[in-house]
Structures are given as structure tokens and as C-alpha cells.
Image (cartoon, rainbow, N blue to C red; front, side, top):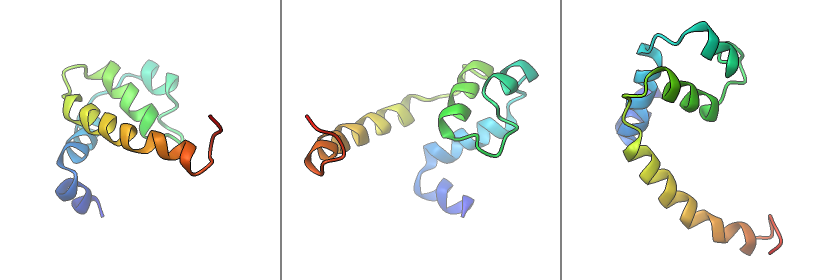
Length: 83
């Protein structure tokens, strides 16, 4: 499945590679609870931003913003939240 992620979403795959290559210090690992099984993308992304600020997040953030703009109106349309 990981090879599919890298193929279909190359930026996402590159960020995962950067995470596993980064030498994240214990302080950051403990702050974001990265050693727990429930560590999700939000925690991993923020830990990587602190540990390896040179990592290129711009393409990911552009894509994420476009997705958010597309989904945000649907949250109200389908009744997940009231306006």
C-alpha cells in the first residue's frame, strides 16, 4: 500500500520518507507522543516541522488548502454543522 501512496500522492510519500529519515530528538517525540500507536498525521507533520524544518511542505499545504476549500461548504450542506 505504501508504494501506492508514493505513486498516487508523491508529495505525501516524500513527507513520510522524510519523517522516517529524520533524527527526531526524544523531547519532540515525547511532546507529540510519536511512540504511541495513536500518533496520527497531525502529530507527525508538526513533529517533522520542528525536527526537520527544511522539509518541503509547500506542495502538501497547497493541496490540503484546496481540499479544505472544496469540503468546507459540504460540512454545512450535509448537516455536520449548523450555520
